[in-house]
Structure formats: C-alpha cells, structure tokens
Image 1: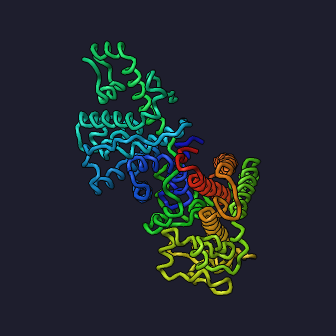
Image 2: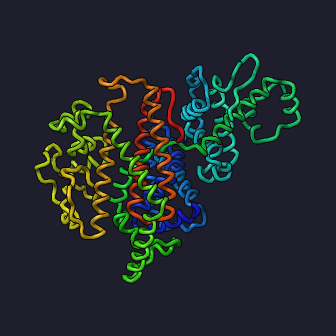
Image 3: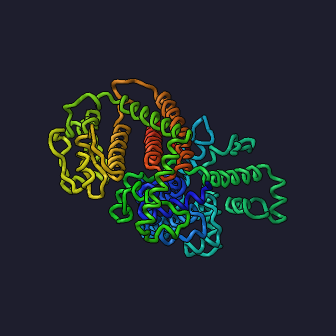
Length: 191
Length: 341
C-alpha cells in the first residue's frame, strides 16, 4: 500500500467523521505541519494555539480536498496560509525592517549538529517577523520568491531583499558556531 | 571593489557573482570563508525541512475541539466499520443498508484474517507488551500515585500532583487542571473526582455505556475525563458497545499515562536521585522500543486497516511515544532540545 493510497483511504474516512482516520492523518502529518507554525511564530504558546487552529481548518476543509496534490502538500499550504493570517491579524508582519538584536546566540564548547540546529531556531526567532517569514518560507520550506511575494503581498525584489538580510543576520548571529577559528577563516562542516 | 557586503554574500548563495566579484572572491580567503559560512546557514535551513521535530499539537486537545466543531460525527472504529473506499469521493456518498452490511461483512472477514496473520498477532502482542510495560514504568516512577488511596484532588494540586491517586481516577481530576478538556468539564458541572468510588458518576444518556455498566464520567464530546469505576466484568452485547467501551477506557488510560508523565517525580524528585544523563538515556531507550512497536503496528495496519483493536494499540503506542518525547524535552539540559525523532 502506497502512502498516497493510504492517505486517500484515511481522508475518505475522515471526511465521514471517523475519529480514528482523523487521528491517523494527524499523527502522520503533524510533525511537518506543526513545524512550519513553530518556525513562523515566535511565542511557543501562541504557536501551539495556531497549530491547533490549523488542524481544525484542515479537517474543516477536507471535503474540498480534490487530491490534485499530495495531502501533505495541501495541509502544508493551509498551515502556511493560516499562520500568516494569524500573524497578520496580530500585525506582526508589518515590521519587516525592525532592528535586529545584534547579540550572538549562546555558545558551548561541544558544538555539534543538533546544537547548531537548535541555535538556528533560536536565531531565526531573533529576526524581525518579515525577514523571518521570508527566510522560513524560502530557505526552510522551499517556496519560490514569486510564491512568497504572492502570499505576503510584496514584490519578488522585496522578498529577495528580506531573504538576503535575514541570511546575513543569521550568519552573524551564528558566527561563534559556524566559525572554527576566526584567525584562519576556516569553518565547521555542517553536513 | 574592495569587499562584499553581507547581504551580497547572502545573495551569492543563489546567484552567480559578477566578474569583479569573482576576482575579489578568488583573491580573498576571508571572503570565501564568509561565503561558505553563508552557504552553511542555508544548508542548515534546508536540513530543517526534513527534520521537523515533535508536533506542537496533542490529539487529546485537538479531538475535543473537533468534536465541539461537529467534525467528528461517529465513533472512530464505528465509522471505520462502515467500510473503506479508496476513492475520496466515495466517502461522502450515503451508503444503503445493504452496502453497510456488505462492508461490515468484508471488514469482519478482513479483521479476522488480520488477527490470524503472523504480523498482526505479533504486532498486537508487541504493542500490548510495550505500551503496558511503558505505562507500568511511568507509574512505577511515581510510587505515591499508586499507593496513597486516601489522597484527594486537593492534595494533588497542593503538592504538584505527586500524591494524586491515579488508580482511582483522581488522576483525571488533577489532569483536568492542565488541559482545556478539563476546564470545560469542570465548568459544565462534572462531579468531583475526590468523591470516591462509591459515589455515582454523572449519569450519561448512553445506552452502550449503561448496558456494560461502565461508570465513566463523560464530557459533552463523549470522551471520559476521569474514571470513577472501571468495569471488571462488562456485559457486552454488541460490537458497537465493545468498541465504544474500548475507546473510553483507552482515552482514560492515555489521560492517566499523560498525567503520570507530567507529574512523574523521578526526574529531579527528592526520593530518587538520578542523573539527568541517565534519565535522558532511559527515555531514549524507551522511545527506541516504542519506535519499533509503532513500525510493527503500522505494518500490521496495512494488512488490516479497519481493525479497531489494532488501531487502538497503534495509537496507544503513538500516544506513549508522544508522552516520552515531551518528557525527554523536559529532561534535556537547557541548551538542548528535541529536534527530531
């Protein structure tokens, strides 16, 4: 049984109100759907609330799912849209050019990949909302600048500008972790 | 041109440099290192996409909201028994009674086949043992929870939950403080969980539950919020009764396990001195065991996707895994967090 077939069966049952099927869909897709919310929303409690709203919206909209795309893609889109709407309601997407806290993230001696990733998440939340949103959508979630521009109501040039500023600031925030030795200019491998 | 701005270096991750920029990069090791660091930031971000980490939502809270929204229209396994269609559109069509009967017969046959299959039986056994063992382990870490029969909800609230009596259903009362479900139940006049086993629970207009004598207080959506009495010898007469009872007890079980996980005194507790490293190591080991159980359960469900018992074992394993992940997130040092599992 393929994943898409399995999803189709679960979706059919979920539309009919089958709690088990709903739960199975949630269990399968919650990590990725919730992750995009967590990355876009700074406050953990607010992120949890929005993630729950996202899932309710997913199940509400399920009868309209036509199967043109994978369920995961469809649900992911809903998560992005719903989260951006929530942020817009809170007017936190407006301040795209807010100053950025310049301090670097905390550093420990045993720098390893998990810690680096945790630090990236911390550093992302130090970006202004607009820059963070563009960075998450482009570099993490894989949206194009055209898609981002459409989502956020900005130009593709604006999207690129925000992205490059975000990358530059993240690089600065993560400098102690990315640079092995400032003297010789070498950096830690990341793969 | 003497240097490149950070923003321009960030752009060069995606774009080609001009001739002048290329020459500058070739002449400056520091700039090249800077560009490499920028690429690592982008690679790290891309890596995030495939490693999403634990979910923010919990099914318990979400299910309550879905029921309030009217999106959950039937008992899960009951709906499942009405047959499964591989076509999405078929699911919304109204089936005739004959269709339902035919689907039921097909489902029953598939379920029987599934239980006879080695994978199905092995998965069920493994999940039962695993979840049971983990549940026991969780409760074993909180000895007060199973022995202090006279503890009250007030005690649990006062001491942070260590003294709550999970076995008699008061754990549900303490858990209520921590969940939206509980808040709704309390505000809707649910009985006190400190009333003891001899006090009747809220009466529920539910034929199935009445028939089997399960006295499980139920909030408006249908899930039990605490168990005043667990049936010892239930008189089940229909499949629907059995499925519904199973669901209620499973939910109560999961709430109790969640409560124990949230209030487990073994981490940093005064009675048992263990290192944070050993707690984390134990949790990782338990999660590995559950991962194997979940994988086996998934394989079994591919063979018998409608089987209500297999579904519940599978979800019990998933729920236990989620509880352990949350415990792991708490147990980790402040500088670390659970990013993937």
